[in-house]
Image (cartoon, one colour):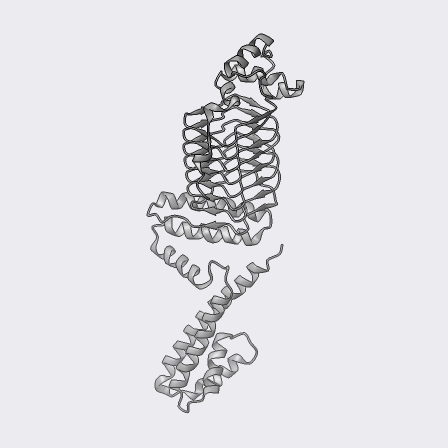
Length: 398
């Protein structure tokens, strides 16, 4: 994402809407209240307030050095630069736009209410951002925003929300948020933690193309069946912390279980592979670690078909050459037959071919050849199992 050109931004202090907001929460909310329906007044919790009187509006207009106050139903804060902390906690907005704004200090929208469309597109937040318990009744757009510090979206109520192509350079917290409409995180980047614990998603959820640098947490979250992680990447940082890897294993296990409940088996398999890898990194048991490493290398935790097939072909060719070297009367066809019979022993006549062919070896080499054939058979059986496992996982139906 390109850095905003701050030279084209207007200082926030020159914006009339910000001048009114600086008069305090009650003044702003009383000014807005006049433009609300009775239902909106109840939704925004302004029943206890009165509208501004005509004298109060005249005094406010005089402070702004304007004849008439602007319309709060369309509040525009676009293309501004806020150098001081923005404290809009508890403010009520109707339709408001903060597009292409640079916030150089902390931003607070705790308990704020947004009754109509909200735009934060292409904003840059240099410090922490707090939307705790905010309510968005008509959705919100954060497309192409950049959050350089902690982003808090916990206990938020919202309808449709867009986080397309957003950069979260620090931890992002969405715990207990209630997404009543579609939630779109397509092509966003989470550099640190992405916490969705106990979050409720009621409609379409897309993490397509998202890049996670840490395992996202969805413990006790409610996800709909049409949740998508298509094209998402997980490039986690390296660490020697067993505790960190154990936490990552728990995060992958939660996602694996949720994908299984949706019968989304490709994504379930993907998260299972990541869980197993994280478990191996959090274990002190060397044998288990080596077993998982072999499982990963041989077949990508059951996700690959061609790799074990190629290894099986290499085992057959190498074994054929071995048998050829020890035969009394070297024959490429006989050597290949013996190797094939040990590679796929359940094919008809293969055992008979092997029994006849083994007579082609001298007594001195027979024991070695026989032991080698047993080892080849065991390795081939494992590889055949992994090939079948990959086929089953790729075409799994329930």
